[in-house]
Amino acid sequence: MGRWFRFFLVIALGITLGLLYGWVINPVTYVDTAPDSLKQDYKTDYVLMVAEAYQVEKDVSLAIRRLALLGSDVPEDIIRNAIQFASSPQVQYNEADLALMRALGDAVQNWDPSLEVSPP
Amino acid sequence: MREERGPWYLFTGLVLGLAAGLVYAWLISPVRYVDTAPASLRADFKDQYRALIAAAYLASGDVERAKARLSLLKDDDVAQQLAIQAQLAQAAGAPESEIRGLTELAARLNPSLSLPPTATLPTDTPTVAGTATMTPTPVVVMTLTLTPATTPETAATNAGPRPTVTPLPTLTPSSTPGAPFVLQDQALICDPKPVQPLLQVEAFDAAGQPVAGVEVIVSWSTGEDHFFTGLKPEVSPGYADFSMTPGVSYTLRLADGGEAVPDLAPAECEAPDGSRYWGSWKLVFIQP
Image (cartoon, rainbow over all chains, first blue to last red; front, side, top):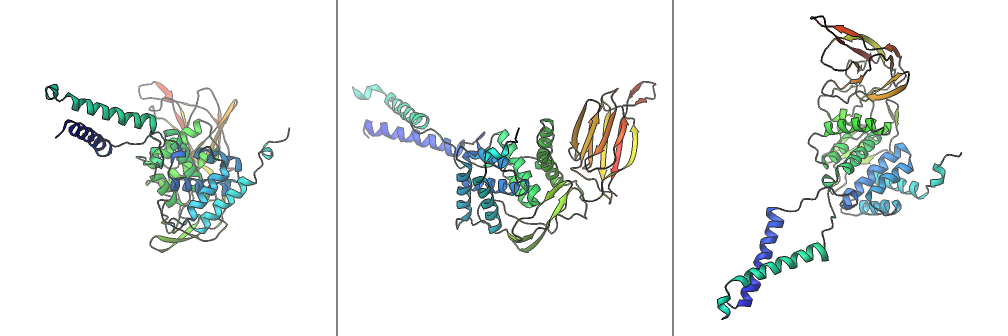
């Protein structure tokens, strides 16, 4: 075996050991993450929860504050993405849940923050 | 000549490989957390997630869905965690609806709870395994009005990792809507254990079952405080207490419009050895 062959062989061995340690022996555990890193299905369920609560509370401002946890995207986009995912064939939320999210989307779209401020 | 250098070049290769790996992992393509699960959320985000689950539960009355969602957070004791968060939320002056949601969900999930059977929350009618049809009806839980979904039937047939809905035959709320609670009993409890004198409240429904989530209002000359039954399920699901300050007179009432109990001030008790200590007032309310 040539020296160069052994040289690269030991590098490959090091990488293999590193991967074994990192993936099997001591894999990464995610802690202290933010909601914007959630998987899309969890985000979608989060949006559904906001929609369920909005259905009773009728507080668009509160719903938007809750949606803001999911990242810096505008709330309309967050809801649109959720509805898109919920409508995809592999998950296919039921129509009642989709209707709730659409109602929230409509409310957010038509929301006028200035109306929230009480007149002096 | 070359062979006399020994195996150090192999070590050099290993170090180079590791360095290259770290440069790639830390600088060129550092870790980005994506597709994480709710269990990995930071504690304060988990609290907000939990509060939202409770708010959604208050709206839908779907306890199975709430349980499935809570399981994503992987709390050791879900009901206890909700109760603790409700207490913290109350101390932090959180909105009443948030406290109520957390309290009622905690009470609903705690197995020691015995909820009134006369409740009129949405009734779920199971159809086939894994699929359910839910027919909500308009209900009132305490002072909160639950509005049914716009669509009368909810087919819980969603695939994917979102919570699976497995409705129970009947859902029971933590309070029966109807007549306000009335004071059934008021007694001075002489127990030297509490360091501070307490106002102890217990709420029962007409069937004699303890009721969680009942809002209690205590007022005195300079202030007012609100709290809920059910935050100490280890005592009783219908129990709540408030620490009194000696020398201050309190008025207590339940938020449902029931009668007020005035002139509640710490009273002294006498121990067998003649020493004196503060007793606690115990007020038992019942819903006729």
